Length: 308
Image (cartoon, rainbow, N blue to C red; front, side, top):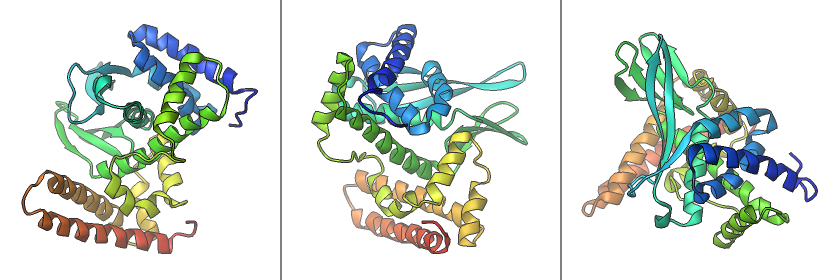
């Protein structure tokens, strides 16, 4: 999408009208409305005008609720599995901490991150598999019993999904920052962009989420074979072939599962390390061991893939 000073305001105004409509329907205050002014068009730029309908449906149908009291997890994309006339569906919503507890950058990051999960779960969200119902969140799934809809387990791609989502969050945040190079007519939107710029005077925004895991997996996330392919399938909802695609590159049919298991174990150890006041060394040693395992698989993938 080629934006310039001549067309930027027409482009942004189109989504200002859309955000005003959903803000009125959902009783959003100005804090949410002003965030969505910059977020919605940045998603259209990220995913392309050909996916505009999906993006608008997502923002229209998934309501944001601001919690009365802050929680440890600053924001969350939530769904409740429902059934009507033998058809399964979900009720979707996003919850965020009160805005008074965080900077604009943190709040904006949270909004982008959770809506990006939602966008990448919108197509082919529910996968029916034998006696199981899978509710997709990007790469990962929440698995339920098909008969009584009781929760069974989470799939193992949780951390990998978060890493990909965080990378895209940074990309979308930087798209928003790029709006500052233009003269914006709408004063409310211009003020939001100015405040974003004041808090982020570095060239590229970097999220604090999953910082250590991102560094370990940086080469994989930046790999020109892995990430474009996986993110395309993730957006469209065709995730079941991803393990085979990964394993066909490395030559080991279990490498994708091994990678995800290692990432999950590493995440658990990092949490234990951060929470522990004693014996932190044993967790650090385990983190290094798991990191080496992840690195070995990434090395193998990079060595054998053609386009890096």
